[in-house]
Length: 250
Image (cartoon, rainbow, N blue to C red; front, top):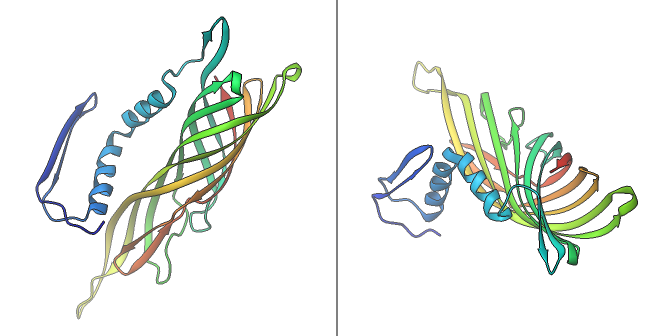
């Protein structure tokens, strides 16, 4: 991971939202290159979200596919929001999410591709010594693929219950404005800006109780933390935690 990559790596690609030119004019480690590339891709993250959901789910609208006259596959999508309690440094907050689901009715089994969104401004990711923060923001995007098994199906009450596991990758985008001493004989205080982005692997354990088209979903997140330095200040991003959400399934 520490091996250098050649200078002047340039790549351009075109989509509906314009052209992105990526040029690296100095030696970087592969790890830094991956983070730079992720940051550039997320400038058009709306396109990435649409492509991801379409690839995983193949079709965003509910449909039945028949095999020998019987309905074996059902595809649908859902939106959700709720309470998220991550690592104590990130603080509690609201979590939003969408997913595309393919259910194999014959085997009581489902697959889903999901994207969650957590946005926060009031939290403290730093160890001592801490910077003198003026403003900060964090966007956290866990992307994960899940597999679940239908534990029960009460047809008279139109109620189903699922339990499953998931794995994926989370991305974070952190921006900070802070005050720093300029040093020297006279000294002085100046405002500085810093931005960090990156990601790591995340695993999930979830349950879903579906009543009609409304569902409740508790989910545990188990993630590898990311540590970064801003000057002499050490910060840590760890999405591990618990969320419970309420949603509507289409």
